[in-house]
Length: 402
Image 1: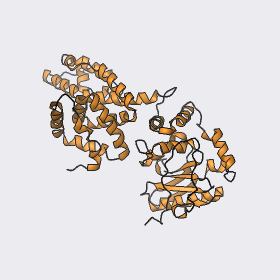
Image 2 (image 1 turned 90 degrees about the horizontal axis):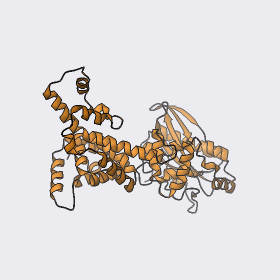
Image 3 (image 1 turned 30 degrees about the vertical axis):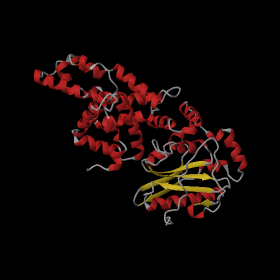
Image 4 (image 1 turned 180 degrees about the vertical axis):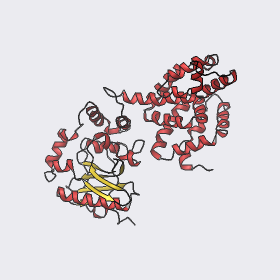
């Protein structure tokens, strides 16, 4: 097969489409349709499942789709796989109950197939125009021109457009699922949300596990116009009181490193304090701390606890090139965790090493890399967070583990 097992294997819920307790017929028909599906659909599946975090969310969404509407899901896989996988991704962010409610509501509002068979073309166009954003673009311009009297089409051409709109119902349905899931996320906080970073924060909130309550408070403060400052919490202030060696101002501000790297151009390393950016620390570099990852709750822990921070390296356009988790331990040492992506250019790794060394000097704290760790009882405490998974201490750019 030309498709990677890793990419396709986690999405094998597609193979189960149509399976029901009432017999094997639907299952057999679904398998036959999958076998005859366009190669382009399978290639889109492989592309959609290439990243592990995305695979996890898409698989959840596809599972719910095939449970609630297997016929629609097969139609979409055959005719608009890209739209289907995008819809499944957003749907997979929601918990199972919310997925079921959304899909049941959309299915109940969908016109019966027998009714659409008798629709005149202007009714078809109105149906798409009343759909989600982007649905109107699915109507061919030539057909609009004909209905508006600007163009004349033959009966055969009109019939072709009718069949084309019928095939595009699956794409319209995919748009409805995607937007329905996004709207459900946006409505989960007072005042709603719309910006991509805001929706990402609300999506990660759904997967923050034991850190959900504290993170919800921070997000609501941030979206209401505040800074979501966890440093103001009493537990945060108490931590600084227990660690007088840590200068709060210096720790919460950090340092800035600017450099011109031959392979990357202008690069800046800073300590990130924007809540919405901190929550993307795993998603930017596609690690297990990202949305859909096994430990996405740890991004919430970094946002919640003042003894944990994240460094971002950005290029001249502001694009994140790499990130690194750092923390102050119970023994007042600066723990430096793995740099991601691990394949970052050597020049960037060297720049990070220089940055954390200067930061340790700036703070007056010992720097701890993987080869320096020798105190088993030294740890990074939990403050507002209830669970935290670190990246493992960094070996540095040259001293790789054997």
